[in-house]
Length: 228
Image (tube, rainbow, N blue to C red; front, side, top):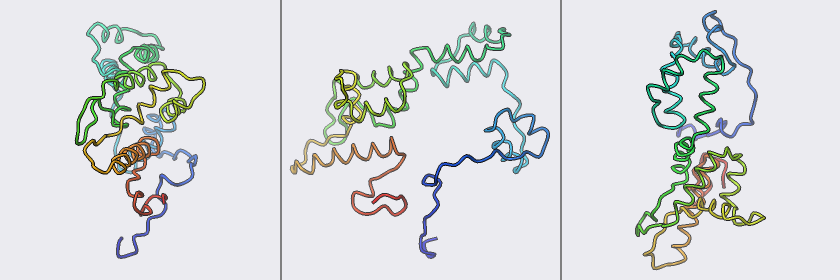
């Protein structure tokens, strides 16, 4: 690839969004299994590999999966039995709605976002001093998930909460996303030290919101991604 000129074009992430038509399935078994259009894409790939899907999970497995996925905790034996015995056609839907309404849902899924934005309760790096108010941002993220806050609002508050009108403490706390930068306190060149913080914020914003690592373009045009 390098000898051929290292051409890098047509990466899927930078192609226009399209609406591909679900593939046509060959076997009757695949057609019966595919309950949705997404299933048809999966079933077509399985057909090409001459594989067959596993049998549907039973209700005991389903409720355990739902609990671990949504709140990170196991169901009790009583909750499992109640779901197994529930013959209502809305039993699964009601289970999911109940789990989504639990405070543990926000606690479970906020962890994923906090990892993405490199949340920590200390400054990390060379002088690992505490950030005594970092927990306010953590709790803001948990509340946002539990309140089902729209994603665009969630991002706007974190990027520009201090500029939103009318002022609110909640919006200001949301900018903890920006304040989560690693901080070095022992650089004699204070301009360089400040720049390190800004670079960390910029890189975290690129990776968290754009899915792009943009460290490379601090020094040169990116070799693969369309960023100068």
